[in-house]
Length: 324
Image 1 (tube, one colour):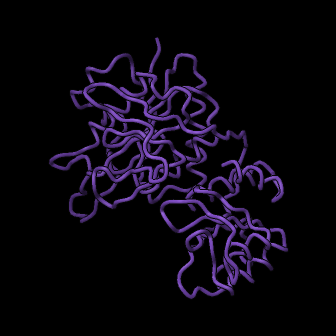
Image 2 (image 1 turned 90 degrees about the horizontal axis):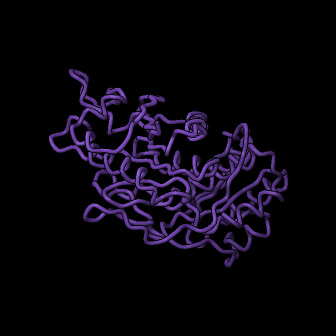
């Protein structure tokens, strides 16, 4: 009999107030997420795979990589129609994008979660989960890669980001907009994402650091990253992808040692481009940096981790980053 696999990882959707502890933590088993009566109306069987039970600020790159592999493992079952993953919103966009880069199937994969804990008077998790499962069953997202479903919208894993700390509509796609939405009982696809890049790797490189430019930043942090074993560095630059003069000089010296340096913007929208001098993007380009288009810094870090895990050199990475 065909089924949908629900892989649970914890997060706010599985969290509650701990008695006497004064804190909220993931404490609800995956199977209990389906106890709400609304799930009785869903078609077919749902098999629960309790992968882990943590808040997503505790998620690590090795754990996220293992989760991506688990998704592929479940999808390889001919009886599995698709996968839903429950995940905390803090790092959902990163786990979803890593899974998207490594996804080996065209079956639907949908990440979802909650902004309100499970024991809240009005939790949003049950509705998000119910509709995410229904979205997988509908096959609307077949062939779209990993998507994130939240507050009646679904987003491409590449584009989605958490833009608000607490609101129910916190997950948005600022550059491209959502892929579609749920309205009056139907899922509508508004656009399709560009051609996706897929990779088959046995490991990823975890030693990729991310630094953010701030006014007057000097070269201490980027030199420390290089000296302490970073295999690549992602720089979230100002505006179009600019740095300070001292950081740009350090970038030139670090790049000459063979450590790839990739450029994103600290802005929420738009693309990076090599335009300015005096520490700007033109200097960084001449130093050998790779420009990541409109890919956000945390996701450019994940792409670098996968490319390095695939054994690519900086020259080989350049083409993949340009197409990302």
